[in-house]
Image 1 (cartoon, rainbow, N blue to C red):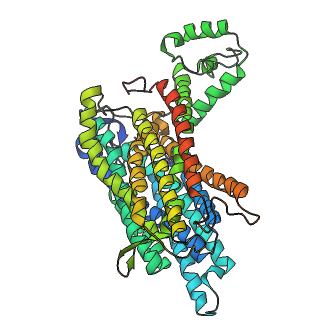
Image 2 (cartoon, one colour; image 1 turned 60 degrees about the vertical axis):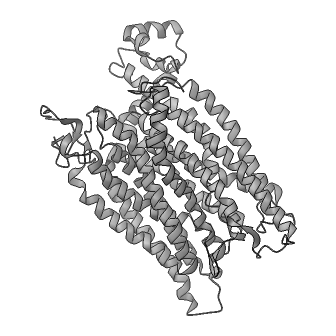
Image 3 (tube, rainbow, N blue to C red; image 1 turned 90 degrees about the vertical axis):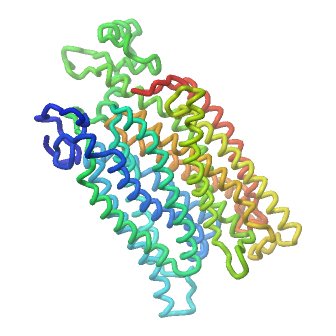
Length: 575
């Protein structure tokens, strides 16, 4: 075994015979075969969960209250701040596609995580500096407000913010895929543990997010933005140390001596397009010769044209194999599920934007003299997840298993669909609560007094946060497991990145939707749906729109999910 110069995975050259209990397809950090008893499993996955908890604490410590920083510290309007938050969040969630591609093709997951964490630390350090600089300028000219800080400081802030997005792009897909790699899919016990891994991974992530929302939003609102950004920086340094400490226990995937999966899959599509005018009879003859008629799936039969060569003598060795065609079909099958999940992601983007702005207008008094930060209400999303995941894993799954005889209780696609319905319900509840808030403002004559607290308890918002959290348990965990499991083995980092890209594109679509609606309903002296005076705005209309879009998206999802054919070892063939 030898470590590749361009990857942390390993080649299969000079592979020695495997001993009993050895994990096939994995080696240790020195390139030697690893025994199941002393490597991987929960022993190694726990390091990954700890590192991811630190990363999520840092990310949500920034994201949860970012709209407050933009509106109060940088003086942006509500709509502009929401667009900027969604644009940054969307970019951060889309970049994992690039990070995963680099990891799977060049650096490998381990090295990508290390490099991404170092960039994370740099970004958070500069972000802390950008938050401190405006306060330093106050000593020079106390008449300047924080919203009029120098352009250089603003540029540094956004540069640091997007540096964090770049770091997340490398860290997020690789750490989770690397964690799942620590379980041997060929071993029944470890295969079941891998299914639970995604649940407990999400539990740990949400627990750390809940602490970040509560602690950092309070520190940022009441103590110092510099301290609120500095704590995540310190935590990421600790996370890097923890990750490196587990190096000796990790299982590293063997890098096979074969063409890059990107090249293989791309080659199938190129060959199919090149042979697009080939007759059906020629395809049938080629399928029979290759045995594809017995082994290929019925979906996307047009890709079987890649089995043909226009001139077999000239292109000998360049004809796609059956396995390569089926690999391409497996990736293509994911697209309808990916596309129909985007509306869920648009709804997901509202947690840290308009939900927070709603809460800022309500009575947030916890006890006399103490108000909770509006962003801290996101704690209830994490709390719902933390409480519901054990219920799901320990109670719901065994009960469902008794009826369905499926190891996971319900299929991955069923799990995702249930979450989509809950997400639509969340929007209905949010719209009804917003109507109640607007009516209360009218009742007390506060419509034109946006800075006066509406005499309505902030706890009215809790149901929509809780519903959102439970929806996440079903859909987000389901999507993570689905995209990890259904892509070719070599592309599992990309699979996680595809899941992340749903949230990323959803955030960007949310930003675009807000921009279009603001342009259509605001301006020219009119109060738009997202007016800075929320008492004149109509967030309720926006929530009803998202509820309607969620129902339409669910109907489309149901259509595609029913015909989906699971890949590899999953023993279920329909929704």
